[in-house]
Image 1 (tube, rainbow, N blue to C red):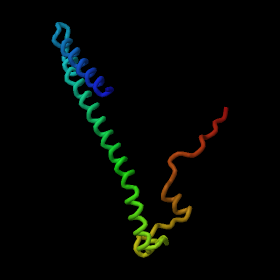
Image 2 (cartoon, helix red, strand yellow; image 1 turned 90 degrees about the vertical axis):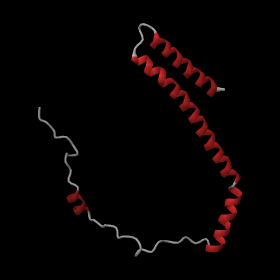
Image 3 (cartoon, rainbow, N blue to C red; image 1 turned 90 degrees about the horizontal axis):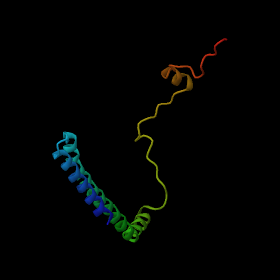
Image 4 (cartoon, helix red, strand yellow; image 1 turned 60 degrees about the horizontal axis):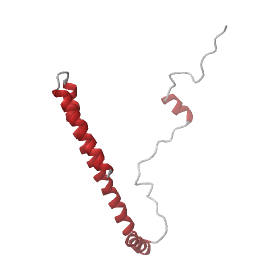
Amino acid sequence: MFLTLAVIATFGLAWWQWTRFQSGSGTFQNLGYALQWPLFGAFFVYAYRKYLHYENELIDAQNDEERLQQLFEADEKRYGKEITEIDEEFLPPRPHLDVETFNNLNKQHRSQYPKETEN
């Protein structure tokens, strides 16, 4: 219902701008608006359809929850419950910097506190 009213409103506003463009005092700005309003209506339709698509995906995910739980339990049986870690040799080494080296690499451009002025 809301979508229908929104699209009708955008086409009504487009018609209004078109009649303003055709009148003696109409400008190309009115023509631009007359062409722009139907695009807003098309966007409303697109956004509504996308919203329905996301809702359907959510419903499908909730319906597949039982099947996914069964797959999780099968994986748990196969691989066990223990948490594994990636071997340290596989990952690149992380740089280890002490505070002095870090401060030398990242010099401050401004002081943290403003200088006090004498009055």
